[in-house]
Length: 467
Image (cartoon, rainbow, N blue to C red; front, side, top):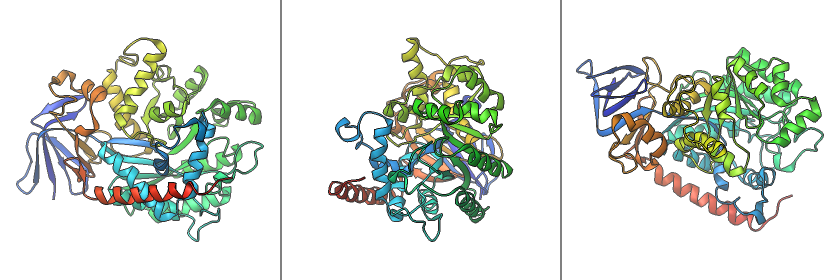
């Protein structure tokens, strides 16, 4: 049966419409936007006092890193840069069996949906057992994360990560033992997972993720890109997050990562560059030429001290953006959106930097990045309310203290720059409500299991050391 969701206001084409509702077919897709349900046999869901908006898309997530939140903010324990932070991450990765991964993934996904996120791109690189050996089913942990997403109800694109080496002229790193596969194993296992998922669920799909140029040599990267392109899959890769990564690429190939990819014609509109912080103007031109996407993760990038992406130069070239929660230090899509602008303000000591580039309003630009940009990055047919698109959405309380009193012409800027996560009330994926009145039906059970896991892991860590 079709369902007609009837809020006070509905966000559509950059405007808030009063008296309009969203008609969702039994296939979970948008049937129409109308003032009233078109037939008597339609289920009506009245949402008084609420605003209905397209769901956010989180294009870059490492769910297991939710486990180290708050445990890497001490220089004496974890050093003072990205490379020392990795030690804490490796400890978390080494600690988790499949059941643990399920519980930490559910916790991260729960927090995402409570923040209005309806799709996640999971950049998944835990493949092997804790002792570094392959599972009987090499996709066991990929399937575990997918099962966690299904349990919570979030749509997932499993971006299966290729990780073949520690870096150019570096010995294998014990902390990465669970990440490694051979190039042949990677393609074989990814192909097997893709075939198993098939068309069984529109809530689950797959993409490829060569981790970085330091982890995947050029000859192997070319084969992965060719394999994914033939299957029309999204391609995600960490690029230019750290200057040390660029230096190593120059040492190995005599050019930067972006130049290397461009020279070997590996760039395309299916390619998402995660972070892409330390890029030159010429490199931005190369991304713009092929209509590639940048996935920025500002809350993680500021936490790790990575640097600030050149969003102004990228936007001026028409480069598309998406956002990701990455290390899960904070899960709030609007915080990532506003920080893309705020970081530029700090650098330039000016205000409203990304406004009116290409005649696009600043608030609409940032909201579109958080919705349509992420959907385009992951190859998902969502991000806006249009007939035939997936009916993924969330509602907010119009009278929440963070936006109360905002006139309709100021409503989108108020939402983008001021909305509290507490204002988000309902979340639907494929037209099915998974959060109602700010609560997920399994919320207490997910939190309780995660709390027990967290205590068990870190109590155990205190009694042992890592190589």
